[in-house]
Length: 384
Image (cartoon, rainbow, N blue to C red):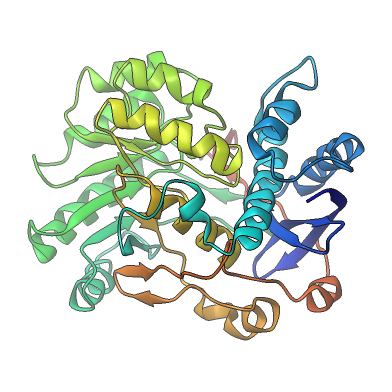
């Protein structure tokens, strides 16, 4: 199983760009992987070009050893760009190994611990008086875990004003209304996309009655564990954080200080299967469940589902509905994720259980994509 070629594809797929990696062995077996560093794909592609120089000719079966070499082969280890490149290659190598042994990847990770993967649904509607309707609709369809978002997502074509105090008031009212409508048997969270400060997060949580919210996701940026400690000291709400973390070392200080209640790992950024399994084990020692981030293509979804199948400490997997691009995806992918809401069905197909039509992929365009820009009312830049 000697690596013969590594191909990188940066393409526009739906509303954003994706980066796929295809690793091909001399025997003809190949595997697909995906990188999760959205809008900085060419930086990741550049790293993959460097890795290619020493990966060609190597045994694709030695996945863990190759992971170590990719991670430690430069003086400046780690970081999001390097980890995203490693993740894409690592996923592709596991796909190759699964195909060779004719087993799904979860068998390589110790076998499946569940027959289907629980999902959670996201309501992206504005946080106004109409927010209850889509939440009730999801409950009627059988969803038991619902997440709200900031309600204001911005416009990629112009800067959008984000008035934090106004948006916090809207979010608090919305959560109270939604909780009253849904009752207490639905798990309810909100993702603030690290838009808040410590003081703003405290203020927001103080507005909510006890039990209204099961968790708050990424209220502030994650560079400073001490800042999360400040929030923790004044609230009882669970934290769902970790989608920005790219290694076990990044997770460790947050785990050590008991700052993660739900671990939002992204395997397409956090080093692929090799590193994600170690992070899940670290979380298991503290009885913390994984709630994986899943914002990318169906390949990412099915890869993450393999990870979810194999770990004991799973809460649920983020579900990104693919309805708007069904025709595009059906032409590109050999298989779409199969759901019986609120669960994703596990396949017993070898490897990832998905293939990509390379001819269709090559025909896709590329278009630079940037995240929407947000500004405070005074014109200063703030987080998207």
